[in-house]
Image 1 (cartoon, rainbow, N blue to C red):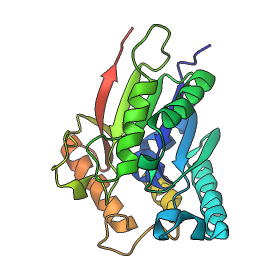
Image 2: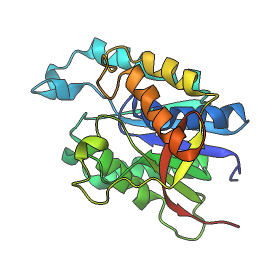
Image 3: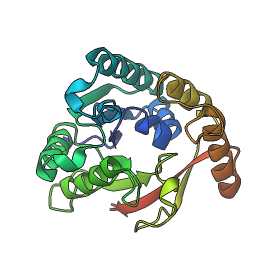
Length: 231
């Protein structure tokens, strides 16, 4: 049975869930919604020429950080998979779709947050495509709303050269949860960068302030509504 208060975040890499919608979902969890997070990729091995050269201890450390961040955001459960970092295009798309379909069938979320399709990162693009396939509007589909988010240092670095460009039309006031978002981001000590990098805490705050000024509040996150079915 579907819960009207269940939302699912589907991200490609550890830290994408925080960067893309951390403030929003932390607010939903505080309001009593059941928050679940799925991170599809291991998030490390693209730093090595060959995946098998990766340090397993580094992968395990990132997994711990991912779970700590999810706990800070208020997630009931986090699902971790080990798809190859920045190599999702070496995996059959059907495999990614099947992972997401199984999650949708098990959790029956009403709302899904995921990547935008016009992103620079190939893993983000394929995650978006897999989510849209797994949540297609067939009878019995529990997902009624899908929102795509931006990921600083990836979405904007496409410079609107990959269609569709990110064009947010939904804004969420995260004034009360911005600090939680930043604290969750800091758990990823090897993923954040010093200012002025877009993944620095200062730049993330600045982006939230920018969207907030557009939406009429001190801090906001921006989303593009993919589709919504209202009762």
